[in-house]
Length: 374
Ligand code: GLY
Ligand code: MN
Ligand code: MN
Image (tube, rainbow, N blue to C red; front, side, top):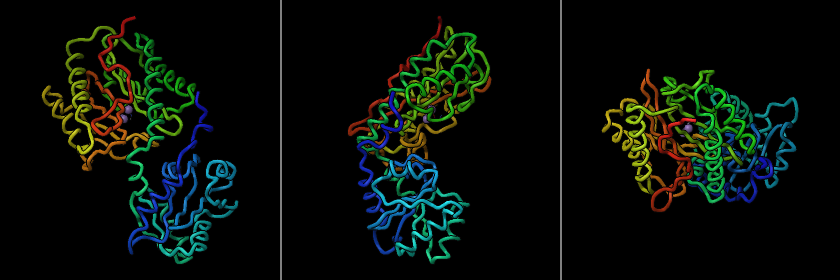
C-alpha cells in the first residue's frame, strides 16, 4: 500500500515548474506584475500542497504561499520552500491577499480563468482598495500540465496498474443476482485498501441501464443476457487513471457481438492512429467513421477522450474541440461507446501515453469480449 502522505511530492521539482510558469507569464510589456494561483489542482502541481484552500502569489522574483489556519501545519510540511502567510482568524482572506500584493508593490495581478465569478468579485473589491488591478491571464498552468514529466508519468502508470488490478479483483462479481451497487462498493473498497481514492464516482450499469454513459449504480441485480459496464479510476499519489470495460452475463447474442466488435474496432483503430503531430479532433472523427461503417455512429454521444493527470478530466484530449497537435508525454483516455436506448450500451476505455512514435497502453486489462459464466 502507498501512503498518500509520504508518497506525494517526493522528488518533484516544484521550483522548476514555477520557473516555467514565470517564463510563460512575465514576457513583454502587457504582462502583469504578479500572478495569483488559487485553483487547487494547479496549486498541487506548482507547490505539492494537497489542501483544498490556498493561494500562490508569484512575481518575477518573489513568491508567497497563503492559506488559512486550518492548513498552517500542513503547509509548513508540504510547501516548505516558499515563504508562508497564514490568514489570521476573523479576517477575510482576500484582505490578506491584498495586503500581501501591496507589500510586494504589485499594481496589476494576473488571475486564472478557472476562478469563480463570486471569487473574482470578492478579490476585485479587496484589491481595488489597495490600488491593484486584476488582469485575466487564461489557463497558463493548465498549458504546462498538458505534457507530463517523467515523475508524473510514473505516477500515472501506477494509477493505471491499480485500475487493472481492481478490474481483475471484481471479475468474480460478474454473475447473476449480484447488484450493481455491490460491484461499485467492491471497486471503491479495493481502491481505498490499496491506498488510493476513487478518481470519480464509480459507474456500474447493467442491462438497459448500460445505455446510460454516466449512470449511477443501483440495487438492480445482474441477469443473464445483460451488458454490464464498469467505469472507475484510481487517484493514487495525486494522479488519476480511468478504466471502462463492458462484459456480458452469460452468452453474448449476435446483437451483443455486433455492438461490442464495432466499439472495439473503433478503439483499436484510434489507438493505432495516435502519435505526435496528429490533432485530437481527427482521432475523434476516426472513431465516428469506424462506427458509421457499422451504422452505429448515431449512438456515440460523447467525446472520444480526455487528458489524465492531477484531474481525471485534465484538459486537452480527443474531441472536436482539440485542434492542437498531440505531443509526446501527453496521457489520454480513448473511450468510444455505443449506447442503444432500450437495449444497452458498450464503452471500452484505455489510458495511453503519447510516445515519440505513437502511443503506449497504460491500461492492460483485457479488451476481448468477456462472456461471464460461473
Ligand atoms: N467517467 C469519466 C470518464 O470516463 O470520463
Ligand atoms: Mn471513465
Ligand atoms: Mn474517461
